[in-house]
Image (cartoon, rainbow, N blue to C red; front, side):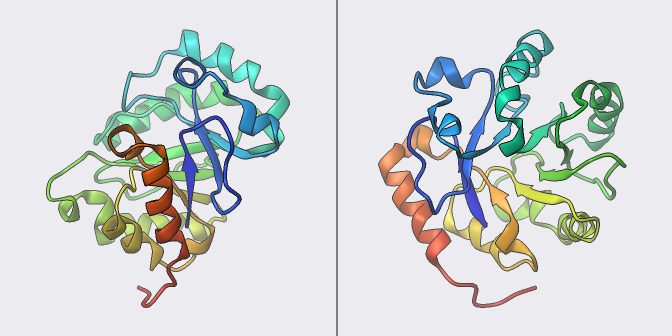
Amino acid sequence: MRFLLPIGGYIPEHFAGVLTGPGHATAYGDMPRAIKDGALWAADNQAFTNGFDPDRFFPWLDMMLPYRDRCLFVVCPDAVGDYVATRQLWEQWSPHFTGWPLAFVGQDGETDIPQGAQALFLGGKRVKPAKLEWKRSQHAADLVQLALQRGLHVHIGRVNWGTGYRHFQVMPGSEAFTCDGTRMRKNGREKTLRAWSGYQAQGVLLQW
């Protein structure tokens, strides 16, 4: 499982690429340098942080068309922790993403993946302690396995620390997963990159 990084400059080769969105260019002036240099990337709808803004998102996505061949997925609008509302948002917005590899967000309680999805983004609301989060449950693991059976890409959201990383790393098929995290906001770029590099370098000791 490799990280998609929320940065726009140089991406070390052992990371998967860039997780970006319409606010990225404002926060990181060198975006999309890494993508122009050939990095793989995925597009976040930013519902978790700022709320989905179609008037901003779709013009930005049009700007990214020259790099679509390296796009792993675009995250369809979702409602954090609410699988019913997320399903409704999928029905509303998925027809607007024609031509893009669209990711469905699995939220707390979800048991299936709609037809047309090309990736599963495992989301869910934040709970403390983290081990009680839905996304670490057997139900979420079953959803991941369903995605793999259908040949979908799997991405795990908010993987910041070693315990979370190792939980998903031991899942069958995890060598092809991507993940992301927000740890850089508090710990800084270099310190976070060193930690995440270490997680990725560790071998899998056990599997589900």
